[in-house]
Image 1 (cartoon, rainbow, N blue to C red):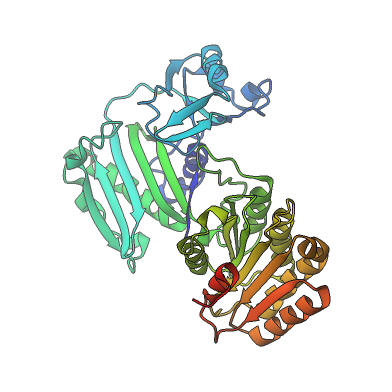
Image 2 (tube, rainbow, N blue to C red):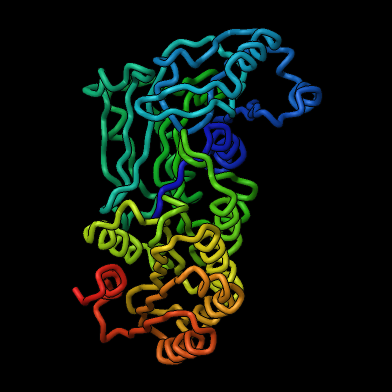
Amino acid sequence: MAQRGIREVDAKLLMARFLPEYGAGRFTVPDRVALVTPDTDRASLPHRHPWLLQDRLVVKPDQLFGKRGKHNLIALDMPYQEAFAWIDERMNRRVTIGRVEGRLTHFLVEPFVPHFGEHYLAFKAERDGDTAYFSMHGGIAIEERWHSVRSLTVPVETPAAQADLTPLLVDAPDEDVDRFAAFAHALYRFYVDLGFSYLELNPFVVAGTDILPLDVVARLDDAEQFQQMERWSGLEFPAPFGRELTREEAFIQALDEKTGASLKLTVLNPRGRVWTMIAGGGASVIYADTVVDLGFGAELANYGEYSGDPNTQDTYLYARTILDMMTREPDPRGKYLLIGGGIANFTDVASTFTGIIQAIEEYQERLRDQNVSIFVRRGGPNYKIGLENMRKIGQTTGVAMDVYGPETHMTEIVSLALTGSAS
């Protein structure tokens, strides 16, 4: 499971759209929220969101970082013209949040709601279940008032509809217990059913039958992406603040979102000499650690994985992306490509290797010219056919290639490539 943050605007729109299904009409979450970016058509924005001209507004960056109030990055109670002037003053400005520097490019705009009584509610996925948190006191000082937060764990085997969250509400006034219990229970079912791994409302307020989440932090479990294809339609998984996706990373991310398999790519050093094409999330960590342990961390060019039995075409596109990047700039010392993985449970090794072989055939001239050495280690369904095909493509193309099966330790190809000897 990988937890992937989503924008606050998307979390609020998901709540507005789906949360009423779990509340039986007892409350609603308004959908009056807009995202402003450098590409936003400002002229049409008030037509799409008439409330922008009717309400006083709240504006803040929406780029997966917190403590915006403490960084003076929240504008409150402003009319339309002032709010957008505030955005224009900050759009594309570089700021430092903690130790991370980045540009401000995405801003959330929503109505300003005068209110009293801020509350806190959150759910977090843990190994043994989900931990729920609630406090009658919310806001930017919640950390200092953490003693007021009640928590309980919903065991992993407990259906969401049967979870009892009422023990969280021991501090709530008697007249509010039923309302808070209904909301907490509905939000928990929403959290589970829509594939969240973390959901925090800090704070939320109650205004009549409206629940107003003033600030939301949300992360989704990307293992649910295929099952949630309809409900997550159009949802963006932005890069962490301070880091912009490369063209290749964005391409693989888009490819990943269209398949039930897992395709991940992070470019670490495009001029690095050690490139990886690893099957499996756990294996990708082990291979990267081994490269670093052998003293080649500065040469590690990328990090990622292909897993979950991707089809031949998707594997080809993934492999082609890696080969294209690694052969753009020659290095007189040569380069190494590690095609590794454990022993697959259900991924068809022959099928995925067919895609990799197609990419090697396409890039064979550049691979030879740049003295690229490929080291392969794999096991699993049809691995013998896959390994034999890899040996043949090495012979027919003249690309240097060493191929090993499950009889060889998983990471031994790393030491063979980088030190010339087995570990």
